[in-house]
Length: 330
Ligand code: 8YV
Image (cartoon, protein in one colour):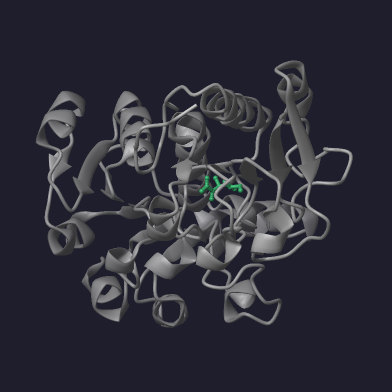
């Protein structure tokens, strides 16, 4: 019986083209693996759609939970195109003997570049200066002097793979970096010259707070009114993790009242961000539609990592990035 892989439809067309470009599904075919996109786009994958499949490629934030697992036990692999698996019920998968994989090494650099893009845009007032040129307000440029980064402190919330890569790039630029992580990463921090701090202290000393922590019950609303209140009025918040980690109403309030200087956001509590969100009318924010890391190298590396996981599991080998490792039977 051929190994059969379903590809979620919200981000892919029936011919296998995807919103990310070519993810190399033909390589799966070459490896003797059959693939097919699901019939219709949906925000949650239903069990009946996965009947007769061995694996499913979850390209976006589609929900996969106990109701997504078909009876019969054929499905054995949920492959996440990206690093975040907050929409995948890991416990339900483990209970059903399904391996969940993600692609942490592939998104590491594109996501760290995303953090830096927002940081530089905020520091140099890039969006405002772009608008001055377009609207014939060249002479107002002296009102928008930027902020040099030498001597500033960037505080990273969540020193996982993306947080560490962001820190590495910032340190290479000579920028002071502090970090908060639930379990202190003393060795990694020491190697990079990063100071580990408790969250409250990190918020108080940072000129830029970069949130890279994974979405989980323990990080829901991690940055709320109290935490924003600890930040310097001159500081900026950058969220490249998940909208749920930051209390968006509290953030909007802090931005409106200039409790903090500004924010750079690639993620939101509700996506797509509703057009009437107060965020869209605020001048001190830089917004991106949860895609700032979508570059050609992102597509190439995430696709390669995803295909490797599919081929490995289809051939009975351990994948490199199982979210909850378990023995794989052929
Ligand atoms: C991608 C992400 O946009 O990797 C993640 O968890 O949120 C983003 O890097 C996403 O993976 C595409 O589905």
